[in-house]
Length: 239
Image (cartoon, rainbow, N blue to C red; front, side, top):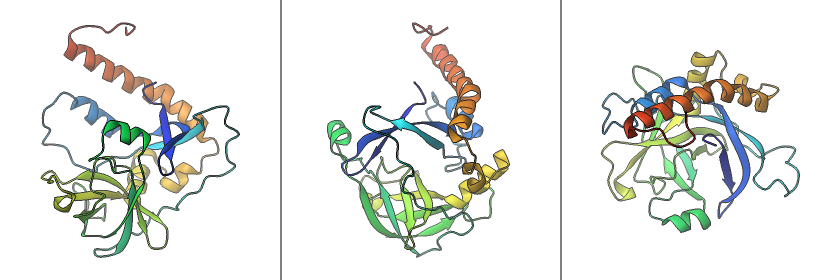
């Protein structure tokens, strides 16, 4: 379906788990749907509300054995951020210069040391919301959603967007990550729960089901209606 995800892990990346949407900010979805057919949108504030939470619901191959009792993870930092010039690692699956077959079959994880170039704010905020990195090999499409990891092994950000005037070579690009502390603050403002509180819910799969039955259905309907309007006809099976 529109919101079912395949979680690939390892190097090369292999589809291992199924996941579904637990939460995505409504403001981001509404802005994204409304701008789908707009050539440019000068009002976009990059990084704002640009994250989603997923919950693993099972294995991609249901017959491949039971789910693990626990998953390895990196604890997020929700009150502090790396400062400018702080050493970190950028980790993800960069794929800008790969063909489609290689990206599907032989996509290897990239881990690159980096120094924070700048710490910046989003919109009218005065807090440390984004981290920017200049000329790093991780500055490629495919890295989005990848991790910014501190020397202590904490998750401090998620790679999210390029500066608008990024170049062709990675040495010319500025890639930005939103901080996990920003995600926690934004989540608190939108839902009343910060990241730790939100993820401490007893039944995350049940919470994801509730979200999908309400907001998921709404987003699907809005996207479909816009697509029908732009195409000028009703696709088969959609009413």
